[in-house]
Image (cartoon, rainbow, N blue to C red; front, side, top):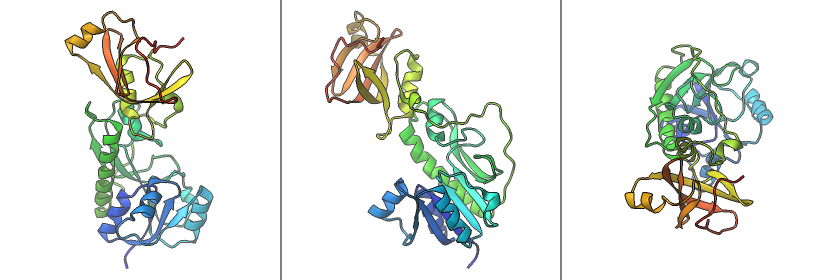
Length: 291
């Protein structure tokens, strides 16, 4: 039979690789209310016929204490597990960043927001958060053509790859994580998604790239009405630049197709895919920088 594996997580891609690799999956614990639960209910995951929904940390710990297994693979588990108090086994986490950089819950967003290299790391779980010895890792270099929706997809592939590399290594750690003063820890906060139009243009554009999946977006408010924007770009067409020359800073010069064009800091920016709370478009002449 070989080693007995347990999977705990909220997304399907490493689980699919585990099934395809033929490991002995004795239990699959799926975090309730996640993409993985929805995928299993809607179309299923090939090779997965039985799983247990987990609703909280205490429930998961109880299940683990009753289970028999040799290796636990965590991928998107939102709970910090007290591995020292759990049954003796290998506890392995697959994290979507190039550790030690971007520890925390939202490393993919952080990679775009702060223009950092990303990737995936398979590491031993210890008493810290994303701090244990590294088994395998893969780097995804930061480039300006990345946004968060694309990087999520690349991270899913990288997570599968680091699992396969770790499996070939018998999940034996290869080196310790070194303390890097440049490394950051990132968990998103509501304020990270707010645009005040007082940020510099580079940061506004990067914020929107970091939150451009359809469940997120960046928000701004005009006259008590809230808006969400999912895409933005600089405009360089000479005709547009000339057209907006007479408009004050942060005053809407064009409004069309759920988007606006405006001047800010000597440049012309375009916001696309704007959703408004009241369903109305933003009018030409509206001042975006509220007092």
